[in-house]
Every structure is written in C-alpha cells, then in structure tokens.
Image (cartoon, rainbow, N blue to C red; front, top):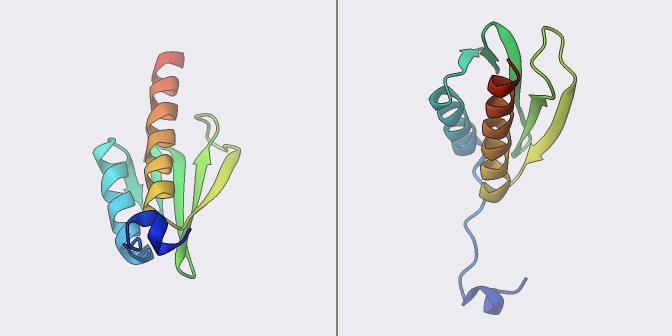
Amino acid sequence: MSDDDLGGFAPPPFNAEGALVQLRRSLRDLKLAERGNAFELRGKRVVELLPDDGAIVVRVARKLALTPDWDKSTVRSATEQRKVIDEVRKRLERWEREE
C-alpha cells in the first residue's frame, strides 16, 4: 500500500514493548490473573505472551483445562493486537456459558 492510498500518511511503526503493556492491561481488565508471562482464569492458564524480536507471540487456550491445547498467533500490528483481545474475550464468554 503506497502513501497515496493512505492520504499521504504512513501508519506508525509497531511498538512491541508498548503493545505488550497494553495487552497485559487489557487481559487484567478481563479479570485474568497475571502470573509471569501468562494469564490464568480460576487457576488454569489461558493466555501466554512471549516477546519475539519486534513482535509478540500469543498463545491462547482452545478450552479451559489444566493442560490446554494452544492456538498460536503473532502480533505485529495494532490491528492484530485488537483481534487477539477480541478472541480472548469471545473464548472467556464461551467458557462461562459452558460451565
């Protein structure tokens, strides 16, 4: 996409450190307990955040379990960051309905 397609403005570069801080805050706002680089719901690990050379690797549990299977994604933009939070929110709602 050229600068002309964006009205002459380029999107700001992705700041992985700032995004990691925002992701952690958003996950705490969803009532998840922070334990190191992971977040738990009722003592079960549901999200892991791992910094990775200008990006963030995110692992989200497929189901609420003591030893979950993980879906892995890499956050390299603000759009991907919002998608991760939305996906975690959807899964939390689904897990609440299932119990």
